Image (cartoon, rainbow, N blue to C red; front, top):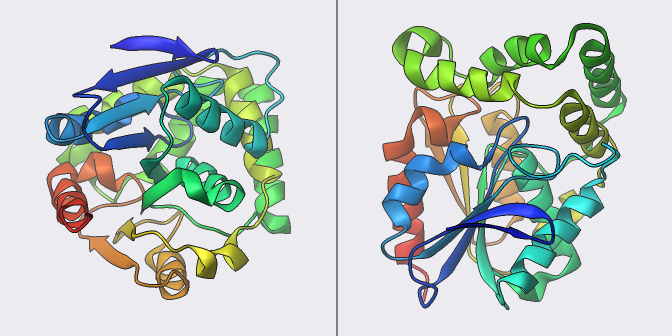
Length: 263
């Protein structure tokens, strides 16, 4: 079922009496990237996806976003759905939201699934790259930005090996509003660093990373794994940054194994 909660486009799947999992997508994509995970888990879990502000079907507004605003949206969705606690699966920018949210309100989260993400804030080079992205969107438009960005998010050869998935992902990203893309770039550039908080995470945590992820490489997630007590790390072969989309069956197996251990 699709509805709007606090103005954000939200979809619900499965029985509300089952344990809730909220799936948070990455940039510049939409909640549709979780399609294969929803198919896998909606029978045993109350699955929720939503489009981050400015992306998918959620409102664009003025395009002036912050990571704190994105966290506010997540918490408002949980309140609107009357969820005191939830398992959170955050991919890339969705992982940034997840880490900041549990730092702010740790009692709201029962477990974490962090996919192809990182805890560090942008360094100066990263901030400059975000600024260049804003400039590129202003100069050439969202479609050209997406055409340059999306191939970097997939493993080498993905365009040939999984053309339907690659092309559908590119088409969706290219249709994103320029204001939404720029707003998310600004939010990511201005986000806080959550690395010091990693050692304070006390809920079960799974980290998943594509072996060929060039955006948040395996060594970055290895560092996070070492700092999060009791966490698990699974590396997905033949996958880049878009591991849940590129290798859904393997990622789903890792998630399923993790979930089966939760009480």
